[in-house]
Image (tube, helix red, strand yellow):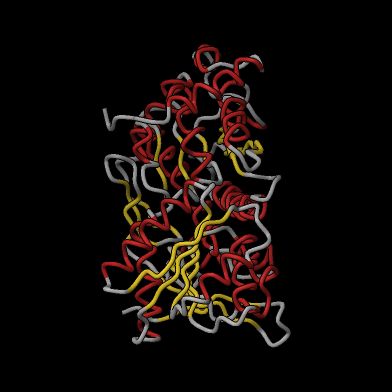
Length: 409
């Protein structure tokens, strides 16, 4: 077995009761998926599930994932799909909580009978929804799940989003490169989100490993809008650097209020800042925020050039990290299905067998993606070579901005 799974039993038990009350259960899902071959969809298309947030305060991040897979669907179908057979994306809204993600996974597996799933949007959701895929032996690839422990959930769980433990330290080192005199550091994090709790642990460890003084750790909620008390407490301790682990809306508002209260030092944002939607939150006050990234629009590969061109034509802005990762997740499925079909005709495989063989195939291959060359560890974590650090640069109008990449060599 690729890995053992240990999780919060009480939490899943509660959700299980909710799902049973709705007439859904893991056993029923497994039974309903055990018979058909993959023949659902238009023109015998192969269904792949997309479980992203379309509603709630997470919808902006979910939309970026949706943008990426839509471009990938068109791109790969135009190139012949799975050896002449098209793919068809099937969408289910995870909303912004764990129950929404579980329901989306249940529907994709038992009703839509997808061969694999991309999602969910948040790591917090993945810890509850991924076990549903694991129990039903359905491959799932996280496109924006970077918290510690995601791939270890089960044999059928992988991700193309690099662990925060790998990415986060780059931004702190970039801040020190800009100001070698940094000594005092204040940390903020959203305590109700699994990813941000995981990320802040990495940030705090990095601060200590670099010999810096962690003067305060301030907590907030992703639903908060007023950060005056936490910001004032931190500013009174005179930090040279502020590090924030939050999502775009709460994180952006925290940046705005720190600046309005007079903080003039460097701000480092976590992975939740990797979206152009943050520009509309903190506007001109976003300027200068440093963010580590696992994607660069100017990475010089053939597929990234094609992806970037398609994204610019469709959305008239540079592609963000989550869109590139979502594109990559679908690419992994497509290329794995293509290679599997050449070994054994997938049209003749029953759905459970296809899911199992697809899961094995994707873990053994390497892929040339918009993120660069990637592969997977035996446990399902992404192996990626290239990482970047960007600084938010706002235009004079204070409304539009861009990610300006810094040298980290």
